[in-house]
Length: 370
Image (cartoon, rainbow, N blue to C red; front, side, top):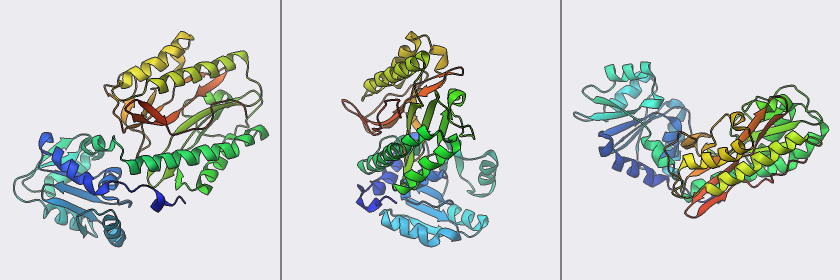
């Protein structure tokens, strides 16, 4: 496992205060945080069950009996000042939270993360007299700008992914099954210190590589295959994301052109990333290179996304995105071309947006040979 203590400390104690400053503009007095990555961001808690009430009077953290010790320990280690309460049943948790809301209150709920049934339950019996208000992206907006500790963790995850690929890529010459190579890559990331893979590793060879999110199969990788690898490592809750495409043997003329065009497209996108750049413009410059090659219809997904506690988070880098990049965001650039008769090519890096450009965190070489 990665030595987390050696990484730059994160600025967890200041996050709830910054969120509270945004409550008036959202038209609420308090926010009930239910999305676990948001709770982790605000408190350092890593368990699987919790609710966090954030208000001007402070924080009330409620979990169940499994996490009574862990919650207290982790919030204390993160220097987060919160009232920690344990409710062993749903009814007990309801009472603990409702007792923390005083007087008429406009209470925000995370609209994207609360089911209709849960909203109805809370509205009818949890906070009597409170006016429930749907909110969107209040915590996620704070999460977009990474502090140095967060960047350190994402970079550590990127380094592990790079090292794992360097270690196992030669195995492709032995013509393994897709699923076996994916397993070896994930095991190597764990051996190098990752908590696990960021997501189910994609290994798509031959015609499977033309499916952008192909799941590894029993297909044996063959001579002449383009192999799309899309994977990442997880370190202390933070993800990395990288794609490389490798050719087993000599590529055909069309495959070589695919590799050259996508690599050029990705380089153009990386060059377009800087503070103040429109995310849609980054997408456009990538798309223009591929379109000029005659493959506009074969680039079937957006160019990138934010990375952090979630593998896909804001900002979105796509043609319809209205985001403007800001220094401190971590984003991917990952154009691709997918032709079923020839295979697929995708090249992706995770990078930190800076004032004068970007610092690329994934450093694996982009050459296509084994």
